[in-house]
Length: 67
Image (cartoon, rainbow, N blue to C red; front, side, top):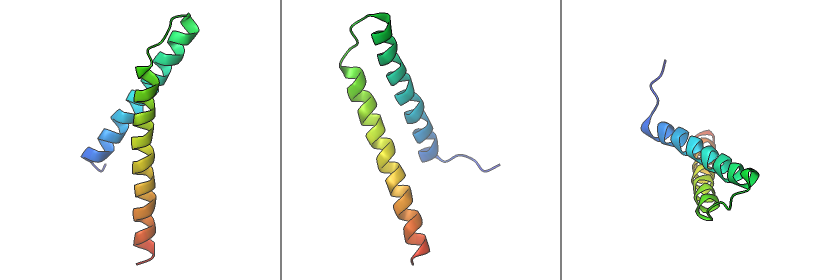
């Protein structure tokens, strides 16, 4: 089994953290509490980080196929 790289483990932690933030936000809404406005901003920042890394992976894979 191939060991996981530092960047891959960072991506896993970012994904888990983003999901927990979103669940916390919607859990607070469902519970009738006023959720902090920080939660959606943090979730959006983590989502942007993940989208950037995904696009970078696609770009690097494309570069390997075309020279």
